[in-house]
Image (cartoon, rainbow, N blue to C red; front, side, top):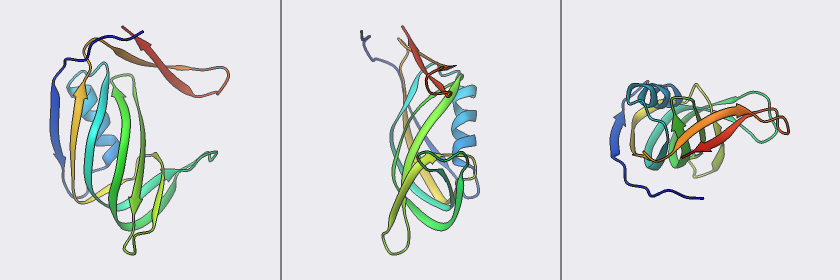
Length: 136
């Protein structure tokens, strides 16, 4: 089942020291996003906090890092973000974006609002996590 996509696109810039995840959660709340997706993101982090597959907690890594990928869903009901960052020699590492990803110089984002959708998060008994539930 699908619904047409015809909502606004927001552009924003995060500045040095801001927490990436916290800033995106604040943005979702302040714009009352029911269903948003990250279209593109570029920038750098002074520190990355990533939760790797199967891990219970974030691993905090000292930068600087370039953001080479950032994808995810956002709503007032929660976020789900994955990203990949590269270090000074080009090594790349990725995972679930957690609080503690601090902006180094800038992060520039474009976020689409999908007004015909509503992204909620509910505990899935099979996974034990708050998983995406899509309403139209």
